[in-house]
Image (tube, rainbow, N blue to C red; front, side, top):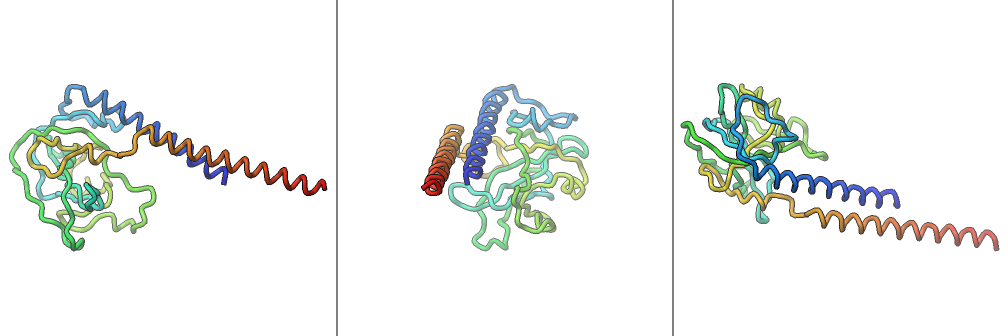
Amino acid sequence: MITVLSSLGFWQLRRADLKRSIEIALKERGSDVPMLIGNNTLNQETDEYRKIIAEGYFDNQHTMLVDNQIYQGQVGYYILTPFLYKENKAILVNRGWIVANSDRQKLPPIESVDSSIITVHGTLYHPFKKPPFYLGKEEGWESSGWPKLIQYMNLEKLELELGYSLQPLIIQLDPNQPNGFARSWSSFLPEMGVQRHIAYAIQWFSMAFIAFGIFIALIKREINNQNQ
């Protein structure tokens, strides 16, 4: 019990460190001059949260819906559409959130965007990774056909299906850009801040300390009973 409670405390401290690093990166990289996407592969560690500009066109035939996304208490989807900026080179653009149908077996209609050459502005963000405790079948992570319903992103498999390479980061389309849906990105960020994680860690460590005190008291009582 003591080990479990202490482990939970250290886990909260690690979460606090992660949130702190995200906040720092958002503040530092978010204020940089936007970078223009080019031939080089983006770096997941150093380029995430940076502002970016891309010129190209949307591949309307290969839109994806990321399932089970919550916004303002409602279940829906993120809409991801590949954006081709070079021949056989693309980056996925998160165009925002739409609400799910009451019948989850039916996907909501998605309006196509202009396929002409345009410029998009946004922020680089990590792709939707496989959850650590994904309970579904491995082959059930995506639906067949297009538009495609996905549970998480397998970039290597998507590249094979699309026939062109994808950047390892995605673009969160700026709220003032056209061709998007609900994009109050601050609403999609984790609400729990660094201080709350630290507060939870203190609670877990306090419970571990109390449990340790009870354990010592029980041992002393047992020793006293044996000496009588």
